[in-house]
Amino acid sequence: MLYEGVLRKMQTQNGKPIQYFLVFENDFINMNQVLDKELQIDFIKFQCLNCGEDKPIYRQGFCRNCFFETPTAGEWIMKPELSTAHLDKEDRDLEFEKRMQLQPHIVYLANSSNVKVGVTRKSQVPTRWIDQGAHEALEIVEVPNRYLAGITEVALKEFVSDKTSWQKMLKNDIEDVDLLEWREKLKASIPDEVADYFLKDQEETHLDFPVLQYPEKVKSLNLDKTPSYKGLLKGIKGQYLIFEDNTVFNVRGSEGYYVGIDVNPK
Image (cartoon, rainbow, N blue to C red; front, side):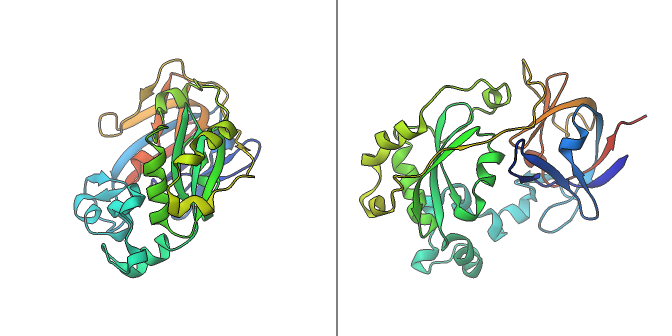
């Protein structure tokens, strides 16, 4: 069966296992239902997620012009400590930035390859952890805006990483860590203005990914270099599709690529 459309990050529903959906404008694929089936992915054209034009994707699904203009790609998204809406100060679009920044945010610990610290809007729990391929996560601080979450992350990453080793995550090469123990270790390093927002009673969240076979080595599929690929789908973790031949495809990293996907191609 043939599907066609522009790639966006897969939508998810937490469960045992997590359910993944690849959603196009007029159709969708429940990716769990095509596990152990052959998929063919063909790159057709670009479609910028902002302007919709067929221009090479620069970053985050946007063409170069849109990446530097759209408020949905502001630097504060990747660096929450640069948020300024709480000061009534505009970056690109103050109304949008207030909606995004002035809402409850979570600082968390997660384990997808090793313990890491991160920030997400409260409304994105546990979606953010699923997207990162974390098999366990723990909320440690809940604050009323993105700036406070950002400065907390900056303080804590002096002691724990803020990065995930995506290769180790995909191979399921995971360090055995105690997130509750790490929470207590890091408590004293939380900035003074955030100390009252510390969450001392949260329990770990455990996540179950639909993977039949983990890759022994990781070969990343790049549609610019390999515009047509065929393989047997063996797993889904984070925002990656995992194939039997050790190829992995980062769906989120390919946002803005318009593709055809054929399930069980002839």
